[in-house]
Length: 103
Image (tube, rainbow, N blue to C red):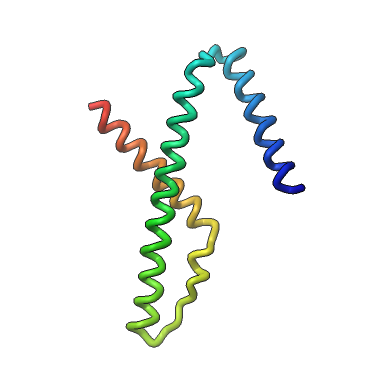
């Protein structure tokens, strides 16, 4: 039930943003497709960074376990902050790449 509520909440605010964008801000409805594709690029790059961060983190944890007397848990990689940081990395990288393409 929680997931359905969150899905409906996101759908409601998306419809409100669409209507507000078209009616109040004068945004062209045809530009929405390009905006969605751009957003998917950002999400995709965030996922790429998340996978790389998890892989590098896993290698680092196993290296620390192997080469030191200390113990580090793999569960450290299960922190939601890693998702947010990876998303920020992906957004930053895509903005950087987009600006370089304009030159």
